[in-house]
Image (tube, rainbow, N blue to C red; front, side, top):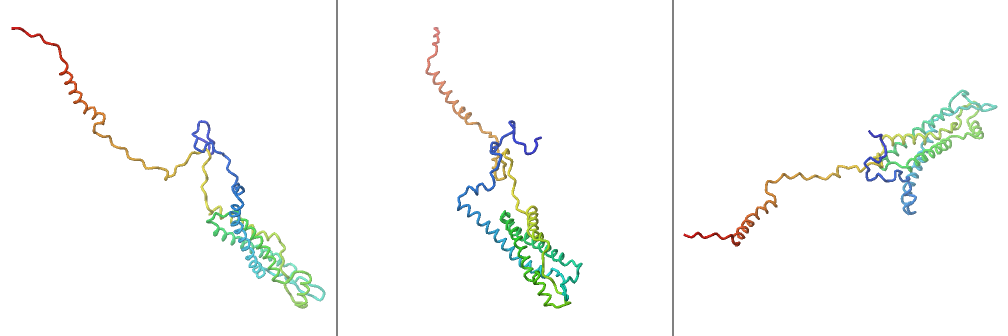
Length: 272
């Protein structure tokens, strides 16, 4: 028994690729060696795909920002005659706002990864798809953060004082949205990449592994040719035997003619 992936030794049958280079060509070497026109023709479509995915992520970021502004809880504030205080000092509204942003980013990452995988499954994905999805997720998170805070009141000191004056003394009002956990900006791109990787590994396009470099050619069903059926032995005499049979009367006739033409020994005549 031979250990799998064992190179052929001196006693092993060598195939046609036995002496080929065991080290494959570096991926992308053909692209680097190509002409500028050919290189541009092959790179520009990939850049277009990545740019389209990034732009789609930016557009979805606007929707995510509006959803965050709508669902996130507000920190309640109240104005007194001397200061502006928290109406609920032990409230967790700020944490809730960060949690809502995180969940929105997680859902956006799952949705975008699923859609991109279904659309790019036939072409086999590619580095442009992955990079475009990651860039679109990060850009969408940043836009959602900015758009959600832009929709609501400002969180600066001047904005809070203006809201307190507008609300009046003893009236509660909500503070502006703030994202305390800035790490939540990475939830969208990271979740999208993880989901895309999982879907590609489970349901992605498959390619057959090439045979080892020491293996011989593998015959496919189309490589076999039909074999003609063997002919039954013939009972007729062989042509050589027939020729010999045809020559036999001729040889006998020639022998008789020779014996008749050649004089034989004379017999003595008996006298009476």
